[in-house]
Image (cartoon, rainbow, N blue to C red; front, side, top):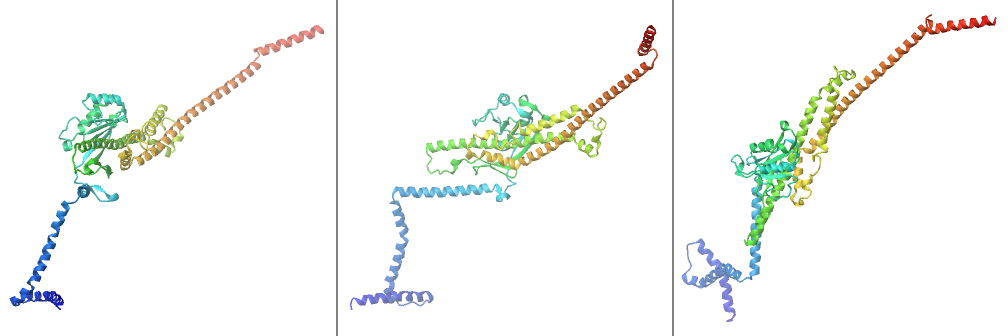
Length: 462
């Protein structure tokens, strides 16, 4: 009984404690102090339990200090990875601010400040060795990033940073053997001086009077590693791969590798510019051939009209005022345009030889093809070949007309010779008849003499 009595008291106390606390909050009436004292120990016990529960995090922190060093490193590494992912996400968000839209509807923000890349085609070809000597004489440093592409392309940078250039950055100049110069963020005055004066002695068959230029806008995205073309704007990724690596410990070896990665990425950026420049130079060279073919078609535009009116049936200088030298000259011009398009240049090649030895991960072939798609180079080459085919038909008609005219002249000459021969034959026959009928002719005298001789012979016999 003594053992059950305290248990019963405890059960009653636990059951009545909540009921006793509820009236204290709803009514100002209080229980007698003696009654409250009986349950004060229980309330204190509850408070003590809550206090000990609040102190548990402190004990966890204390236990964390006692964790092994390997667990602390693992925790620090996971935190570093999390911060790295957050930084990458933030950079991607900033990069998306330059480009709007999604998928094929992406476009560059019109408010973004862009720079200009310009291509100049002023000659049929450049002698690379002569061009390198001339450029070096002007104070330019050849191949400053040691790309090793000097025989196939000349790369120099502007020697000063004028206020006319955006961001006061050095511009890049690329000189290709196809007679094209591509400039990145270079003022127009310096570029034209280089094309019209400095490189003129190295130009083969220059055509400054019909020099073609093409412009594209470009911007540098420091939050993107790869480059691309969006619309008519080149987005040049200038972010180095070392920026994505965690920087929890800045040791000298890591700093050295980081600087090496940055230098390599600068070279990769120059190679990307060369790829885009090669595609732009290809388009500018094609524009020159399109202009030449347009001039050719303008000079022969009257021939289809004359053929439509049936005037080609009459072969004469008044109707078809094209001499043999004119036809041969136009045929030579057409063959020259066709040869420059399909034989003597890399316009129809899927990939220039300059990119065959490049690293595949750089994606230079993709950059070259992106420029071709943006400027419709493939479609323009197809259309140009079709126009050349039509011009070739006109040249064939001219050659056939010339051949027909020459053949007709030979036929008339032969007819004239035959007529003369017939006349001479008739004259000879008439002459013979006249001589035979004339009494003074030799034949008549001979006949008379023979008759006389025969008569004398008969008289002697008789």
